Image (cartoon, one colour):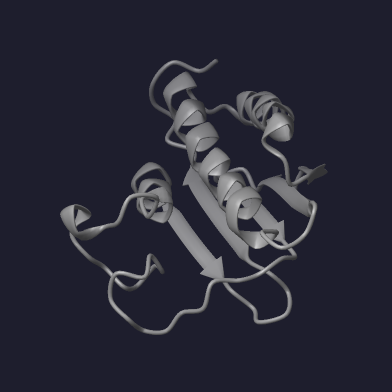
Length: 148
C-alpha cells in the first residue's frame, strides 16, 4: 500500500496554511527538492482557491477533501470539492484542460489551471455534474537537485 495523507478542510482561505504545511512535510519525506515542493504548493493552492472562490458561491461554506499519495515514483495530489462544477462547453478559452489557448488570450482569473499545468507533470480535471470538481495533480520524483 502506498503511503498517503487525507485531509478535509473548510473551503475558506484561512485553512490553506494547513494544506501547504502538510504538503511540505509529506513531499519532504518522499524526497522532493525544495523547488519541486514550492511548485506543488503553488499548484495545490490554486486548486483549493478555485474551490473556495467558485464551488461554494451560493453556500455559506463547503468542504475540500485533499489526498496526498506517494507511490515511490510520483506524488499524486487530489483536490475534491462538492460544490458547483464548471461545465466544459467545448468553447475555446473556457479554462478547461484540453482547450488550449495562448496565455495572452486567457482572462484575468483564468490562469489557475494554466499555472497548475506549468508547475506539475500532469493535471486532470473531472467536473462531474453532481459531485463537484476533482483535480488530480501529479509530480514525478526527479532525483536531482537538493533534497529538503
